[in-house]
Image (cartoon, rainbow, N blue to C red; front, side, top):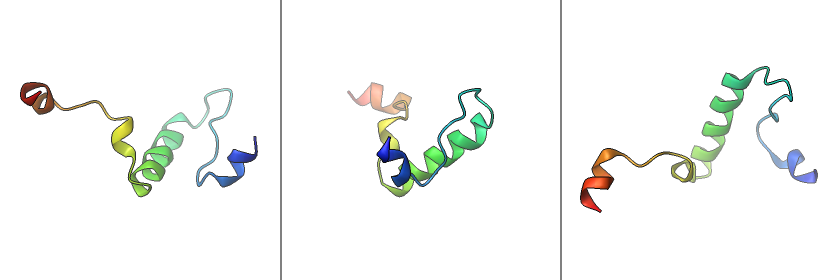
Length: 50
């Protein structure tokens, strides 16, 4: 659990409270780290090119 201290966002509550804020914070964190694309679905264009 020591990794939780390194996060720039608070962990999701076990009850799910604050889910939308948590998602926004996680996306912002991943975008800042340059790895947001790892959780985004590919666009339709990438299917057509592949």
